[in-house]
Image 1 (cartoon, rainbow, N blue to C red):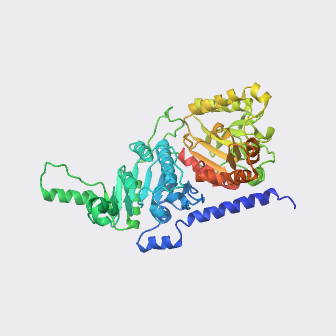
Image 2: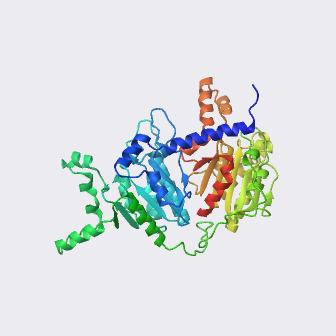
Image 3: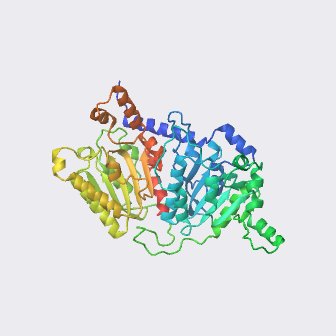
Length: 517
């Protein structure tokens, strides 16, 4: 059988990626979308499309919930569509509960996404808009995974006061989601929606009282205007009155979104700020992104990066393509890591990249020390960092051990701990073993963006190596190979990556992240 060309391999990987993206966009399926429309309500994606400027939405965590795991049902975007976009050209973070997927409930993946969203809002001090339409916490499925993670509500509490929070209650909103609304600086609620800690079935079961959703938590319960009117009619009282939390009652989805846009536009832009070392690299005041950069030509990234995992290639060719013309300064290019300084659309970056052209990109002591030195420079100069990962692991063998590869790896991790600025991580082909940690692939590590190219693979070891190491049977090796093959999507499903992209989307993806810096 003739060997498949690199172009054909990329086309196959990209075709699979596009298919998976299409499935995510179907949300809960045609029937549930029609049912949502029959209630006079828009879907989560329709709401975001109406809220944001055209073509400005950049989604984060789209593949969470998208993989069938045993009896665990697929939940596109895990019922929570989130990312960043613009309103009148100004950047915001957004999250919308998707009532067409499992009733908009909050599962393990949803909690991880909410935590990621709130952490990003806190780190960047950008406004946050949440559109709520869900039934609270999801009933735990026997096959669901339990993850130890910080609480997302505490993360939202940390955003309060540092970033404006605007919330729209678009439908029934219960429990965990309802509590989310109380953090709003401006709360909008659609007439006919409901907001409560426990829904009618629970109230009926515990108290024996039958009550509708609207009676229990409609606008007449939570609107400030309604509550203040009722309080004034009652006259004075020593008892503390609940004066409501809803600032604006909208007649429908469209008027609610119009009010949110109006409220957001009235917010003052981010003011001038002095660089704070505890936060790392921050932008002082509003800065315009160059729509075009001084670049003589744009290359086809698919022609630079091989689709297979074994072909050596020179990462310098990719770094040169990323850099603005006449801006690249190579700091170190000897051995397993290339470090550099460059400008990208006018923004300054320190670049740390594995070099697959040298010993397959295995990270040796010299490379780890070079990467640590580059990170130290980024700390000292308050510069953003771009990490390009493509390595099968640490250098191995007696020579590697006696060269102090473990000590060098520890030095690199220590510098990562010191770095508090904005880091973009991209796994190009492989992040095996401890390489993922050493090259900054950490969902709770403060990265502003983590991406993987289609077909990229992550894991403790390559499947065939792991099979030999533990003397697995052929069946176990097949399971390992299957897990590895789905590495990029599997990683994105666990929110290890914010997104999976095609090679030629790499430059635009980095560019879209610049508005967060």
